[in-house]
Length: 347
Image (tube, rainbow, N blue to C red; front, top):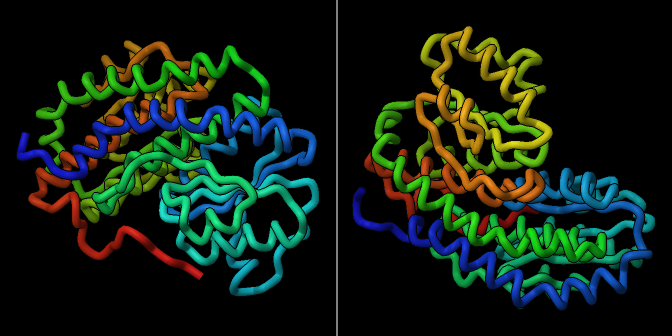
């Protein structure tokens, strides 16, 4: 393993960051949810980039755990077209590690103008977004120096899980959530034992990443990390969407990464793996299922004891390390990837 990079250091900080967030923000989140629980019937989430992937997780989380309809905002309606939708009894959540992007701030400003409940999830509590929202969850991640976001992503997932647990008034689920940092730590240990095997993919120029349900978000997040760090052509799909045409790209030796923890989506992914093998795909598997790991060319095991609704906090970790190792093996700089900046402002 080459000399440690800032990105690797921040990947390894994630269990401590999530633990800190859960300890410091739980009481404030409980107070917020107690106040607003009866004020909304749906959720609208505004985000961009990595935060948009966290929002995809929230669609499944709040949908399955809180039985709430969740939509992703279309910021251009608020800025370019100046035709924002009418919001009624809607909790508007904005996720942004920097809190700087004007189009995300514009969604919250409009929600406030329409007297809707607003919540910002950000790593900068002095940002324009934090100043605009009615309530703020501080990600407590410390300064994220590497351009590629890692610890602010998993902290955003944990923040939304915290909201979900308190919103449902489920102390039992909160107890399970508090076990997540330990599971993250154990997953990182497992991943590090597989790092030498990742050199095999040094010359890989294409990859498909597949997840479903809660880990649909994970497939997008791993894909964006590999793309921004290495410039590799990576596409992400749910297993269902992949069958509707894109599976035609799979030929002998085509690499596919499957995110398949135990849970409701596991059976569907198992069936897809069987089909991929008939097409000659090379499988990279992030899973806690022995049969899936055994069948993979590169097996990336995860801790076994988290429920599926929390699995995205650990399944993303092997993917982050895979992106890091691919970058190093291609002799690229993971802390300063070409052509992108840490803070992106869109309008």
